[in-house]
Length: 209
Image (cartoon, rainbow, N blue to C red):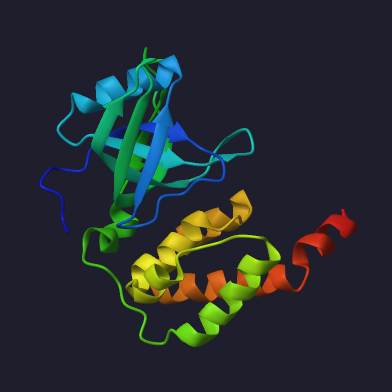
């Protein structure tokens, strides 16, 4: 759904390694560092209330992140903040913005991700039986659990995007999932990553290093 505000040219950036925010998903965050508490305070004063979730990459930041709108927040007794972000759109980081704020800000471009502002995507080619078979084996191998009833009933996009955010893939793999534009391609990449892990891909990489 298109937001009722104009997407800004600059947003606050919150670097989080191993964390991504997929289209139309939500991300809970626990904020306690003074600079990010300041970021939240400043963001809540804006009309858009957007914070850019983006992964560190090398000595800088990844080129693609996702802007989430603060839709809920609460303060703990010790002054920490629990917030919930709802994804609005992915963005391309154009350049960092200098300023006096203690947190990072960036100039961003939204043009490549106009589809994010539409309704949920469908994946008619998805073979749910095959995907859930892989997923069960992966969960057992990694001693993970999930709500299978909820997963079975989830719509295509919610299922794939939730798995992309929650499964313990490497930061690079998560970034690749984030940058994949179409849901069907993201699902194929997700299945490939699961199959790779089940065939001992991680162990093989460690032995080669």
